Image (cartoon, rainbow, N blue to C red; front, side, top):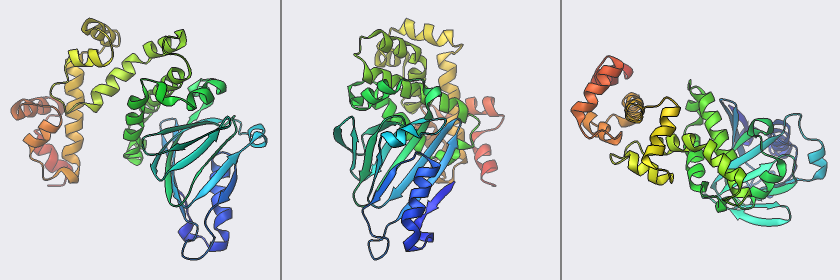
Length: 323
């Protein structure tokens, strides 16, 4: 959903329109703009919002600005405050929390708790992609969130969560309409909670060990989904990546009612089914597409696809593309 496009707003009204969209729709702040309201370097902004399961995803690309949130804003927070977790696809962003200043780029995750003061912004053209987690659903104390936000890279889970967030942001509109949106929101919340707990405490602290144990299944399945195209995605590799034994891996999956071989085939078939229906993959042969989904044999892929969906891959492609 488009929240704001300043290109459609009169120059003199842009600052107020920006403030209204940013503070009334999200979190109260003081907003300071770098660019003038008119002229060749005029203030610009485009803001969009999606609802994926129980998560609000907010994206903005705008000219230089800074938002400041102090104790006055904290005292007047919304009835349901949030924790924002954002990526910075464009520009060098600057933030200040607990008196510590730092810069953020494309490989950084930025975390703010609505119940803590902070400053955030950038110069020139920049963009941000933020997920809003209800504090009750995230269930992490404000002091833990603040402490973790200053040392996220200390967590061994950092890269895993970063890649997961990037994946969600590839096509939020499509995910919002997907039947699995609520499950995705739950998994994302669990991963973010685990990252915050891990970064806020020493790795050997009981709370971290408990959180890592609780999210192990989510992390294993998220890893497998990212590597579906790898033909060497073996139980041994999956176990090694998560510092458990192969027997431990099978016990974990069995406890959740999951057969690893069947789960991988189902996930790979579902990925292939989506790709066959997407026009951008029209030039790929069925064999090439099967390889991209982790199938070593085109005939094996076709048999599995026919058994799962009642038609051949070619028939499905023609049906979905109106052929």
